[in-house]
Image (cartoon, rainbow, N blue to C red; front, side, top):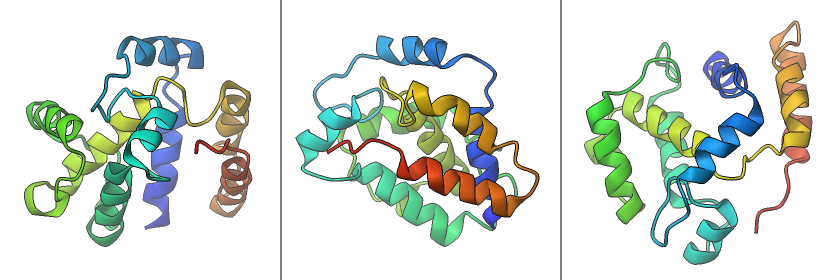
Length: 158
């Protein structure tokens, strides 16, 4: 179960491209009123009066309840046509009931896309190298400790 979460963070930070390149791509997907994907986190939180985007809360709750025991939960992508369709729907209304209409692979793919498309990375450029280093720890326990330390250093977005 915990291994899937570690794999998610390894994939998130191990893409091979520089943070500047990822940031440049995400900035092109400009923040537009009503959007969830590609929107500045602070803008989304202010607009929705939330401390965590509703889509992220719902996706994590669904995956915690039904997806963490699935092999490859963050490695096996959902169907690209469904990902595009649901991204568009969620950009119009992030309050969809994910459990009724989606499978774990689709929700995991959308969650990864959400974080990948953030114009300003959740982990600042100053935290990027420490995040990569956290993935190189020799055992899961020290990796988790390094990730907890890293999460405590993430800026307050509210």
